Length: 103
Length: 411
Image (tube, rainbow over all chains, first blue to last red; front, side, top):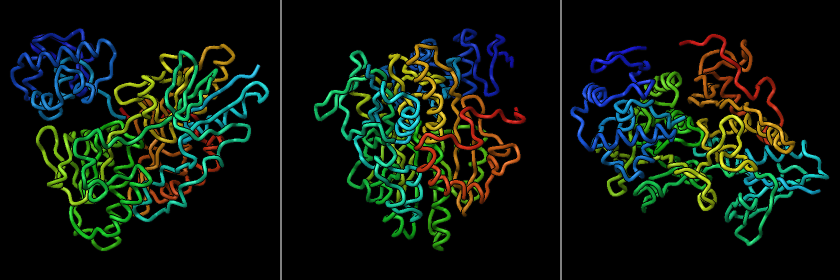
């Protein structure tokens, strides 16, 4: 389905995750962050978001475990930055699919 | 010329592959060897019932050799390392086994050491697990003496073997305490890193309702930072705490340590595997089956069974130098014990999440995603099917390796 976020039309799934990561922009990230209750994105948030996008582009599976061991952020910091579902929220803001991680 | 097929692991998947391939590979050309650290075969679904006194150790453990077909060598030893570049597996006793084709079926293990504080002084005092035989036995003794308090059932991290088992344990605990007349003295809580009761949305909703109906509290999105054994509580990374009198945890699951020693796994020691052919993504002569893979399918015996049928065909194609079948579809089929002598049955694959309908045929006799007595009896009868049909590598009547497309797919 289509949605307008930060003045741009993008494709999203029923949970609001972008279905085409190339449609993403920092303005879109900022708008989703506000919707998700994260507020203004800081440099620490953006470091995580850029890392998530790089990993997704490489086809790597993203988990809280792999994030915690990435050297980019500790698990604790990830929770502090994106409270209430750190990987789900950070992925949504990063414009990548919701991590499967679980079967 | 004599060639060698080597199978690592004599669990569900490894034993089934030995059964399939001894029938299919000519004895004059192919030797087959199975290696496992244990000479006992454990019927793992039985670990769910043992803590409640449903099964004894005698019911669920048999000599592994009984299920290794004749014409297959069975070696009981620890694996030191796998070296695919030399087509060689070194054993800890110093032996070296060379192979032409390797099947890795080394399964997964629980890794309580991955969570801070889990293996503290109260491990198996009031912090228990049931995914190991020793753990299930210790928990049986603990439950027999448990008269009141908070019982917390916990899943630490996904993926775990048989992802419905912790839920089933919770349902069975509810029945267990009710039958003993002390249910109102026990507070039951289910703690999960997922956002709901299960991984697939539709089944999650159904199973979530069952928890609520039974008065079981559910705590979601909870990733444990540590187990605080001094104060008997689970602590989440976000600061939430869940106190317990008895914690039944499902520790992080990881692949076999030999996989890590060999540098063949991902960050949980699961081996990158082609999700439709079961060939290793790194080494064409290596195939991976069952819990040892990194596939986005359940780690469950039914999955290993469906995989084994595709893999047996693919090993023959590989030996003949022909293209592999991209056939395996993630098919999984699980009985879910829901307590009170009832069970649900779920059937799903990579593409279709669990749905309602008849099973194995559209008219039944079993019903999917619905509680029934027949499903429960099916689960109990399955132990005999396991020993006599599944491990022998025979097909299950009416149940194909690929999932049947649901009759009407609800959107």
